[in-house]
Amino acid sequence: MDRYLTREMVPPFLFGIAAFSSLGISIGAVFELVRKVVESGLPVGIAARVFILNFPEFIVLAFPMSTLLATLMTYSRLSSQSELTALRSCGVSVHRMVATGVCLSFLVTGLTFLFNEQIAPAAKYQATLTMRKALKTEQPSFKRENLIYPEFKKVEREDGSKEKVLSRLFYADKFDGKMMSGLTIIDRSQDDFSQILQAESGEWNVKDNVWDFYNGTIYLVAPDRSYRNIVRFERQQLKLPRTALDLAKESRDYGEMNIVQALEQLEVEKLRGDDRKIRKLEVRIQQKFALPFVCVVFGLVGATLGSIPGRTGSAKSFGLSVLIIFGYYLFSNITGGLGQAGVFSPFLGAWFPNFLGLGIGLFLLGRVARR
Image (cartoon, rainbow, N blue to C red):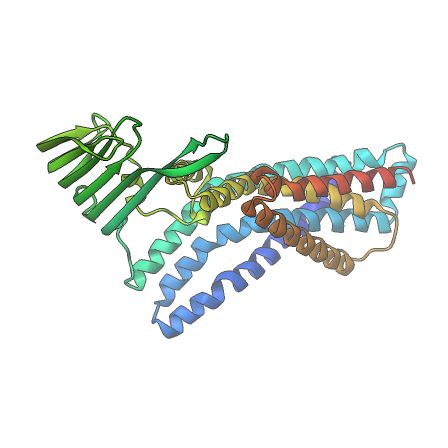
């Protein structure tokens, strides 16, 4: 029975991947590429390469949709031909029949996670670089001028509430990829004094994990804002965070990062103290974990709905799949937005649609099993 159901689900699953990924890339990439070819003179060969590099991103989105389509179409056809009724008359329960589709959806979940982590982000990043180079808009891998990095900390007031205040401000006029010049650093991280550093240049010392500053002056300021000391130096090492260097480097778009890279970017954003960006990135990271498990939810819902006795054709199954997919992703965007707004936690904002879909699937399965 498992082999038979698997053989029946593979063709509609492959059809779904081809259909949904082609539709997605046509809407999300082809129109823009055609415009670039016509208006900006993008070579057709480069456009074709960018098209291929963008394909894995849409294949990832097609995996859950194809799982829903395959399970719904397969179980609906077998139900309409009374094959599922024959299995039940032989003592096979609905739970056992649906388990085949759910187990296959777990395999698709692993495949989705692999594509979403190892293939799609790297391919999309290469597509971005290829496009920039072809259109001669290639940017350096670092920011060249006016580098500003504020770092904040939370202090407790007398009433017990916490307030975010500036802890450190890092500014550099220019950066050539290795050396920064025209540096001004205001350090208020210590309670008993503050220091202001001005240096002609500075660089990150990889060996000692410190900053090396050259030809500058350090002003030590007491809490009452009086000068405590002035130090002039030709070379001075200070143990400050390297976050300013990380920010100077080009950060990838969210879709071009895997989970490890996104977590590294999250640590940088936490040091900057921008709560809005922190929450947005936290939600995005949770969505990267949640997306592959949509396959399990869709596999359960599709197999259960298909097992309901009735005469459901392929066209109706396809239409019902599109309706479920649209509703799920609409709800997912809403909960994700609520997570970024702080109404939901990042975890709940990303995972709530999965939990709701799983609950609906289990409820429907119980109803069908009692028939």
